[in-house]
Image (cartoon, rainbow, N blue to C red; front, top):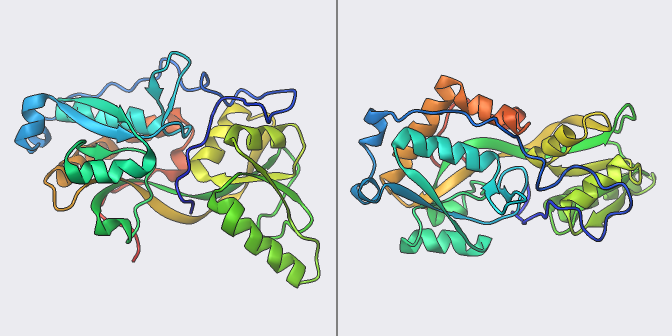
Length: 292
């Protein structure tokens, strides 16, 4: 899995001619899932949140398709739609507060925000600081050009695009490339871009043989260009995404109950499908579900 790094979703200067549609404007349109308040769950909210009528949510953008801004500057994405649905179950409004990624957990600990929502990987280390309400499973996943198979476990001599500074660039591909050279085979050519959209565009244009990224990022890129690129193998190295909340906070079980209600009703699945990330959908929310 990656260390969370914000990825830019607009086509940038590194892209060559033929910019893909994997952009700020390419999220679902008119696909909002209507969700009603559930009084029995809403009644469990901490009094402060009940009285204010809002959940303050620390968020770092952009990281499409989970949280990013559309062309009007509105924060949108899979995480956003899901959090809005959770807020509806609880009868409150989600109030998004933009922040640097590294500042969100400290802001939760000081009470500046109620929770975080920024594609946080639930980990044993982070559980020392906050609790996590797990809602999704993400890993790494490769994409290839349509009809041009690439084996992620045997990509010796292939060109593979990645976003710079991710685990895909710094850990996964160097390890796989070393295995190639140790076996007397050609190394993997790692083609790194500052922007995730550029890594996807390089694959669409045939400048590389494959792309490695976090699974929802890969799924979203394919959703934008289904006639050009496709999955190359299954998700691997999976770990849960979770919403961080203060340690032992009563808010954690309430959020867990709300998202579990959405899972049981089918609304969670609809939201995931709207963004093309249903392969990471889970059936049961837990608190602090990361392996030790």
